[in-house]
Image (tube, rainbow, N blue to C red):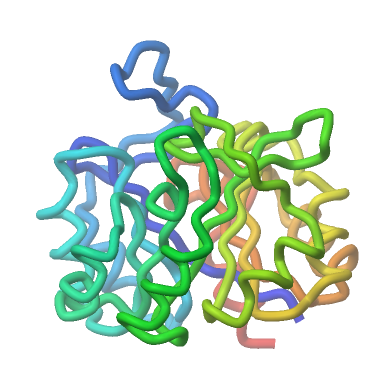
Length: 254
């Protein structure tokens, strides 16, 4: 059964919800859907109280280390950590309280070519069970192409059953943001959800486009319950009106 996984997206030290495709290095054109008054640590405490395991803290660019660490300290070993993770700091994040680290950009060279050797090296360094591979992607003529550097740079990797197979033995989970619909609350990418659900090799969490509880049902049905989901801008605790947080807590208790 599809489960709800909570998120804490941090930008410039604050918990925010943004339109994924507008995130860039210089900040020009950034569209913010929501900026929280509550801290990252307060969100972590709330998730812990409601036993919502498997969520993630994502650092959207620099200047977020302090806020991220505060969230991990608020719920030790209860949240995954992503954003700027490399082999140099992965173990440090786990020591800081992350249940697992999430990695994307470091697995590619500066030209966007996938480095399987880096994945194997990191998996050996921290242990497969501690590693989540982020395959956040954008729609292209080829299907879905993994994007790195805050979803701005397309890589040479396509999200296919073959690519999912090739990496699964080195990581515990996949996190997949559909970057083109992220933050728009206009519905999920059903074809991508179907692809992931048909594969179903290791646990996966899908993010992007959820606008209502109907979309949660769609993911559950179209993935055969094999894909978990996170909800951002539509969620009432993030200023949205399409999905109530308490509904999702109840959903996970079924």
